[in-house]
Length: 458
Image (cartoon, rainbow, N blue to C red):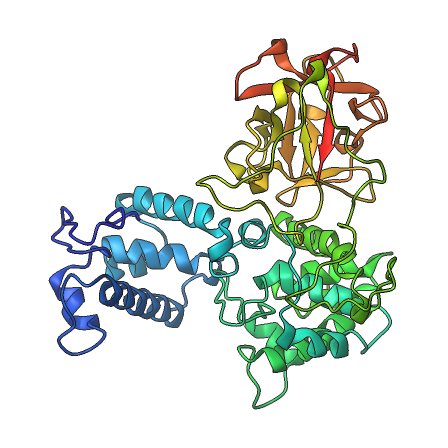
């Protein structure tokens, strides 16, 4: 996209040609098969993939920072490998190019057809890959169930949730931070818990090893924290194996975000009978690819009201941007709609810390789905609805930030259809009764006005 906008006839300012923007020199080096047509899109994409893998391998061999490996490879593609090797950093001349590619990658990672195929260098990026939990692919069900029997602390739903948050069940994923395979094992963790002769790229080896690793880490973290499981998740994501020798548990924000997403998914997988869940209908539902749980995780008992503020109707069947289908039953949570029939939305569907929430036309996009958590927070894209600055004054921005468990992140739609901060006892309000798409949200004393009325739609 950055090189050509998918134009197979594109020509770049540095002499690149085709959809991948490769120079003649790179094309000759990485031509994927003899006599491949110079402007053939499939051949160009294959050549680009080989080139980028080669750059990443050379950077890793040189001792480059694994956390930044993908971005450094992008920089090397743009500015040349020697330039990047000299500093182990992105040169100024390539910064704009790298940022543009990363922005596009983040967008594509949220699209259903690419979910699980792109990962960045942080847990926040991984969250965008696996924003919505989905049933376990049939071929992995037995391995997940078996991995969840190794110790009392690690259940099959926890294993499934961790695989979903790590890779979206993608066994061929290479993370920008060095994670490998379906469980995104870092080399140090695999070396400690893996079996000689096996590979983290083999899901039938990685899944049981994940169970063994998480049992071991949870036991070790019990010395550092009252609830060791979230700390063990953070430790696993960071690729640490000697945390038990330190004086405190890991607390890096990215690792905490990863742990938060795993915990968010556990309730979803706990509903499947083969993973130990309970059925309300008596059906022995399989957790495989063709199954869905009977009730979305985190749902509320009250049915959505058929008519909204001002006598309006709820949104029609939702569609994704570009005309795609509405979210599948595997999507957890609900949409929250209100003034002028628009939906409470994370702008752009991007999990960005501190972005102010808005009212947008209801499309069913990932930034319009909200899931209540056990601690009273409302979550979208793995982050939490929040009061800016933890302020309860009228006019305080309602925003999306990393979940921290604080009082400023406790929200619920009550029986009066107010979306309230349950501690401040004030309402989420459409600022200035703005009827336009993009209207900002704020905290305000509850008035009962239509611009403070909210309705849940599954």
